[in-house]
View 1 (cartoon, rainbow, N blue to C red):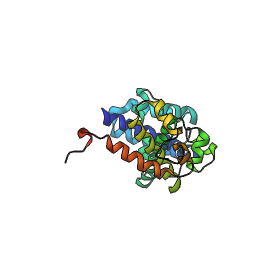
View 2 (view 1 turned 90 degrees about the horizontal axis):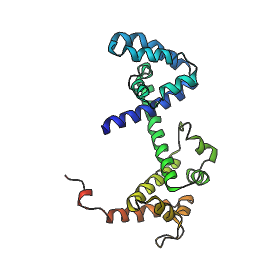
View 3 (view 1 turned 90 degrees about the vertical axis):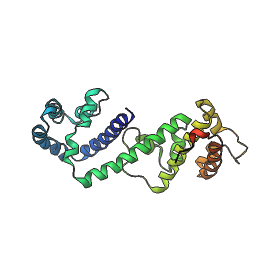
View 4 (view 1 turned 30 degrees about the vertical axis):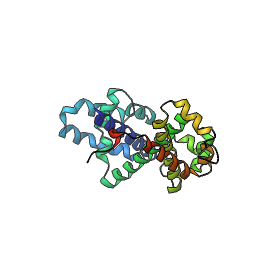
Length: 220
């Protein structure tokens, strides 16, 4: 069940990236349409799926995208049997999967910020980007991110995960982030904003490890 849900999530992320590409390069939609006759022949049991794709791919872009990204069972079935994937060569698919990984990670960053009540201006300072750029990630994932920015985003994701283990109550996590803590020269949020997350990592890693029990240790 968990594997199926993960596959569905990856298909959703992938099709968001594909549709972003298709919005820039209409030929991708034409290539997907051109795949349908072959797919009808090779996989006739999915005739209704291919017919639904044929209907979608000739709609105005926004309507088509809404259908492809639909969160109902129909949308999941379409994404699991996609002519877009068949229309891509190996190098194109690899490039898109790299973007999927980046999209998933920025989604983790935004969820971590939401959990910890890190506001947009603070998110922008952490990322070293303009607020409108970071705000745009909620609609369209970034096509690329510098290595330095990626490391700072990882700090926030790692911080949230450690705090979730130490403080299951969300209000406690948010309070900790903005309170004076004996282990640090300034409130943790200030360390994040001034690129001093290394200090947070060290202390939180030790705190989490101290709470590990026998069931948390991998068996060999």
